[in-house]
Length: 217
Image (cartoon, rainbow, N blue to C red; front, side, top):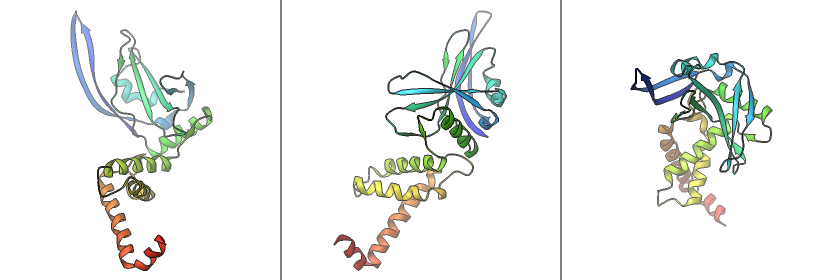
């Protein structure tokens, strides 16, 4: 099951008094249990929202337990940023109180399983073929490269180019960091993996200096 972290505050008016209830809960969602059509929105500040309209709503039961459909509209969408040539699958929600029109803000996008990522990707490829959607592996590799770059960007000993090389080399070994079953990676092991790569590269340069000389000729 994919996971969605819900942290919000619900306000109810009972007998003229406002009551607030804080909600902090992780809900499970099986996005692959539905098929979807899409509705492409208008451009807004360099991005377009693609709404994913499911053929059934039963798979959202843990979310609708918190936000009942008789009181709330629930919209599922994928943002497309037009400056990017390729896009990863990132599923977000807009939840609207039908009575007040208030939008409920959810702090995170859904953490997708491998199956759900591929299911949604296949639908986006079919429904909105004008946008290039990254494969699961490409998405994880790109995230690792970005995280590695940000992690080591403050290291004065490394140039910008060397950080990019290191980021690419770390992402090539993404399977050692990937979260089992999910479109995510474990950042805790990234630094030791990067250190291992640097150590092996320096060991090779020290052990085979003649080969290194040829490299610089």
